[in-house]
Image (cartoon, rainbow, N blue to C red; front, side, top):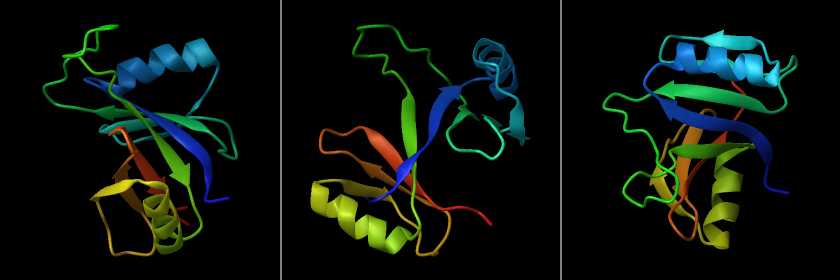
Length: 122
């Protein structure tokens, strides 16, 4: 096992507003709110939904290639360096790396969908 699904991240123009909608829809409380992103989930967090602010946001349109769906998943891992070797061996491509042992790194799957490997912050 490389890691486990931790977060579904949704791009949006107003994280607080969209989190209000999904919080009511999914009956999930806010775990974190920085203004730039809002995280909903259970305590302790196992799988969360995160809303991140995107300037110049263009809403997705179902089945219209020029308006992509704008979501990605976060995969919780114990060690970024070990997990990176494993996902690269599976065919992923590193898009945005960090040499820090904690935090996150962004990859593309074999057909270009972005996903992140993340580590616990504590």
